[in-house]
Picture 1 (cartoon, helix red, strand yellow):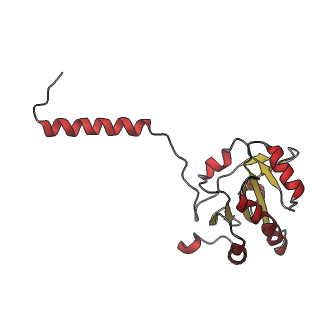
Picture 2: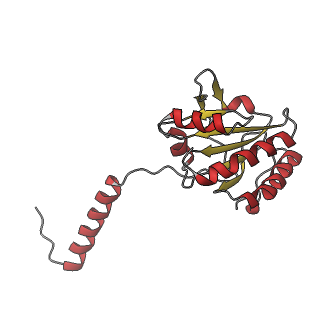
Picture 3: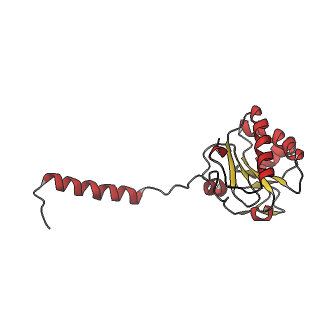
Length: 186
């Protein structure tokens, strides 16, 4: 084995070897899906388990994809307002699709029994979809254009957000699938 007599060179080599080792051991993180990117495709079962929803089936429509959980206070505020919003736009052009991330689907079913909404909800108790989207906040919603490109990401929710969401949806419905602008992000 070769000895290094130059302490600066030996330290630099040790540092490079250490950095390489640390990077090799670092866990891979999912990158967050952002405005201007194609939405990850997926197929998932409804909460009742009777239907499989495939996101690609909604190509040609503007989709508001909403991640929620029964334990999430802002989600509870959002759902009735999003339900009202969904009814404002033509069903042949706009679809709300929810993804529930409760670890026990029974909790989500109980919540929806007490707080009915007109749009479908998918069950993802393993949390695979939040991982594929790089979700950081509950709730988070994605406004997706007709071509399957994310046009707007909405982390969190307050009742006062609904008018801004309505305007974004109208904008995307009117523009079709143009490239996302820099101000498309919140």
